[in-house]
Amino acid sequence: MIKKVLIANRGEIALRIIRACQELGIRTVAIHSTADAEALHVRFADQAICVGPPPSKQSYLDVPAILSAAEISGADAIHPGYGFLSENADFAEVVQSCGLTWIGPKPELIRMMGNKVRAREVAAEAGLPLLPGSKSALQDAKEAAEMAKKIGYPVILKAAAGGGGRGMKIVRDPAMIAQAFNTASAEAVAAFGDGSMYIERYVEKPRHIEIQILADKHGKVLHLGERECSVQRRHQKLVEEAPSPAIDAKLREKMGKLAVEAMKKLGYDSVGTLEFLLDEKGNFYFMEMNTRIQVEHPITEAITGVDLVKEQIRVAAGEKLRLNQKDIAFRGHAIEFRINAEDPVTFAPSPGTITGFHVPGGFGVRVDAAAYEQYRVQPHYDSLIAKLIVYGASREEAIARGRRALEEMVVEGIRTNVAFHKKVLGWPEFLEGQYDTRIVERILQGQGSVRRGIEETP
Ligand code: MV4
Image 1 (tube, rainbow, N blue to C red):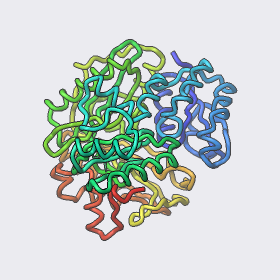
Image 2 (cartoon, rainbow, N blue to C red):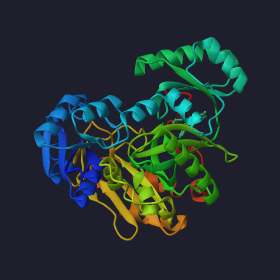
Image 3 (cartoon, helix red, strand yellow):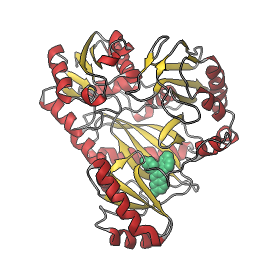
């Protein structure tokens, strides 16, 4: 087994990983920037090493500094969390070449899924349903136009190196396709250093559904059901729930089985998430795969009782999964609210000192937070300060508990999106479970805020 894990991350996920390690009897090493010297992950880890100044590039993304910290501390494994280096195949490879255990999937799988054109190819070969679109990267604007004509408008151009909504362009008018291709490709070169593009039929009012996978290094692959992540603003998820109100047991089993079979074919060997679009008719299509633990993993933990981070560490250490698919039962309903330090109207980050902080508690409430009273929210990092996860026997109970818990939440001294979450829990289409990825736009229209769809998103 792993003896000492270095956590190459910060914030609530670093704490989440430390807690899992403590329960497994594994020592922990936190790394931190000078700005995070007082952070909870530093205080709760067995050991902490400063790896650089506040900017992420010089600390949480500084590979030589992180590897030196691993060497100095005698860590035998690295957990990357989410964001930062978590989906960097080169980092995973160098971690392994240093003789350390990488707590994540094989680097080649990270690389494969990082290229969205390649991911589409392998997903198709592995039997996952795809939207009509290009089988490989588009050569030029002419090919984009030919493909679009075949697929039928509207279409969406996506950057192979993009993902998570970055580098996409919707095209509704055939007269615009060549220009859209050239602009999008040039933007992709500027953003990712890779102008490769692909094309798909555009789905108008999709829901974002993702399937949680858990696999070991011995060929066993399980699915832990889906998460509904359609409550997003500019590709930032705000509220997630499990199960999805749009998915029944039959569809869950169908999607889960397809995902498991595909992951078996690929030899997937860690936690991972397959993202799908669900259209208005109930058809689902593979979009992309995330090869890391995700922010919203706790809602799956709540309804399955499986500790995903502990399982992720165990399988990385080479242990066989003790769970079987028949042991995975879905019970009750969970909702996660991402509490961000941001202006409720402009959504601009709102750094500063938290002068008052009280988190809700009681039955069915979990708060994963790295903030505390007198904590200073840094401008250098993302604005997530806490995740509130509520669980109930039914969706109605989870919603009522969410309302109650949000009322208990106190964050003073900075601005947050707590009021937005209360609004979601009063929004009829959310309450009915009948919403799609544009729900946030509609909620914000109601309060007269700036609206931008993905058409205008750079
Ligand atoms: C799409 C789409 C409609 N049709 N692809 C955005 C994130 C990335 N993973 C895929 N995305 C989309 N791809 C086709 N063919 C609509 C989106 C999309 C979206 C997807 C999930 C959640 C929120 C979204 C918001 C806008 C657009």
